[in-house]
Length: 211
Length: 211
DNA sequence: TAGATTGTTAATCGATTAACAATC
DNA sequence: TAGATTGTTAATCGATTAACAATC
Image 1 (cartoon, chains in turn red, green, orange, purple):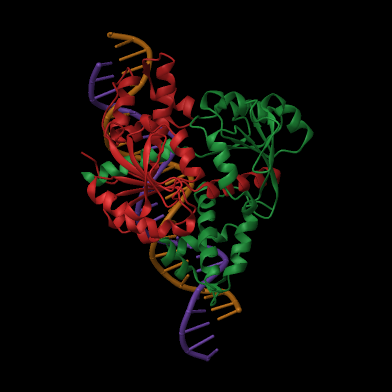
Image 2 (cartoon, helix red, strand yellow; image 1 turned 45 degrees about the horizontal axis):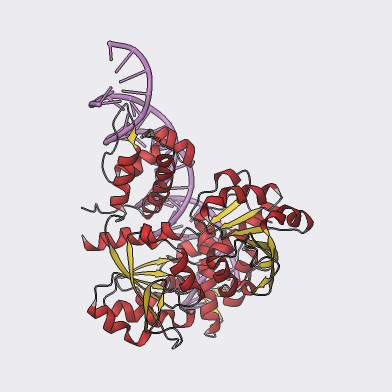
């Protein structure tokens, strides 16, 4: 189904479309034109139509797009109607915050296990998910299908862990450490959430605004 | 100092340069060529030279770049040697995780206050930072210079709060909510950390890898 | 039908890559 | 000096924007 060669720019915009469509959907709007969307989102109508037409023709000439239909199409493209299994590695502050804060139920990911090295937490559950010892992670991955690993562990062990989980068969990594993960790069999919990169970019723009 | 019209693509790569330079710096490497950096980072040497030359000529023909010098230049560009003051709004799980987890000491941001509405936490300190009631946020901003606000509060109050802090004089927002912040857009700088966008992109690539 | 808006091709713009003279 | 590698201009490539015939 997936067409080849769709640029990352396009993919990265899809979640924003979802966000806006959800917002006008909850406001009861049934249909929307690319011109109307472009006004709200600060893109050009042309770009929106180009983006969508990478995946198919979802609109009707002279009418526009059915909001709920379009939303459903994009959700499908993003795999939001598929279930991916995931494990979380590192149940420290950040890991626990993610577990209790992030609505995995609204995502396409099902969290099936947590791993940590702290004896005080191994064997318990966090937000209803069982916590196992990190030593057992390969065994677990080989026993259950695990699509993705969420890395919320200290940076200095991130690379080694990325290598371990990908060697054991995990396909994707959601990387919350401020590390590059080059050793895991062999064909695995890495999505980085680099807090400090983002903060440095904010810092740059603050500087710029002062000039 | 800031030259105009430097593309976001370039700015967004700068933190990565910092990361790699730090890594080879701590390995004791003193000099590096654009070719060597390009191999490590998976960019072209041309692109690296183009990126850097947006800001000045930091290298020596026939020699390359002094790692520590180049690192220092980029840090300067990113405002990492300036101090920005920041407040954090919303001391729930995510806010507290950020407070205890993220090394603000390594950043150019100095966190001077936390705001929340929970009486159980107002008046105390979290990670050494005093917590005030959100009602007093305008008063505080007007009394102290506040460059940026970190939003780690529930999504449904994010827009209203963004508007409040920018009206009170805050210039930048580090937005951890999964909300767009259109109402704060009038001239303020917004850096988004949209967890679910990132996860949806990971989901897309996982789908793609299965095709 | 007339008006609106799509899907899609063509034109433009900007970003990346290649090339090379300058120079350490 | 000869070799290496920069800074920078030119060429290429890709992404965005504009235009418009097709069509609901």
